[in-house]
Amino acid sequence: MIRFRFSTCNHAWLYKTASAHKEIMHECIIKPRISEVNGSGHISNTVYPVWFEEGRIELLKDVLQEKQFPYMLARLEQNFQKEVFYGYEVIVKSGIEKIGNSSLSINQEVWQNEALCAQSKSVLVHINRESKRPANIGDDIRKLLAGTMETETPSF
Image (cartoon, rainbow, N blue to C red):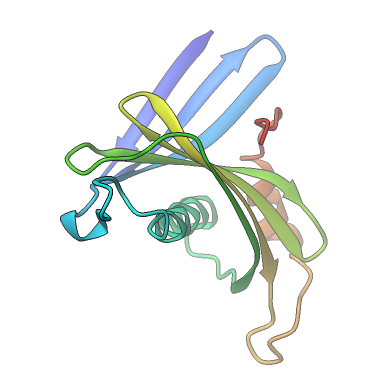
């Protein structure tokens, strides 16, 4: 297995290659804030959607560069495996699972101290800014998105 990691600012691409398997996940590093801690002493579950949103935004910004991709969040599923605590960085990993006619499915994970803490699946619907209705994903954007698709979907 060959690993290459390119890092800029607060996000990175992680490449893994092994024979016929290729997986590309985007990483977004987040520093939890003290205001995100709940009464139980760990990060509140209400914070995760914000972290997942930041991961999706960074993924699309890096993949699409200057291309516009207006969307609305149509679905968000979350599963929590382990508590996350203040004082340690969090890594939000994001990968494109599926590209439909007008929608995009993204798998995400939250990691802290090398432990998987939460998983998310989201569906984004590409929209026409003027009509606010679903719009087909153009070939130029589809090609950029397809270049980052996961070949194996993590179990959720």
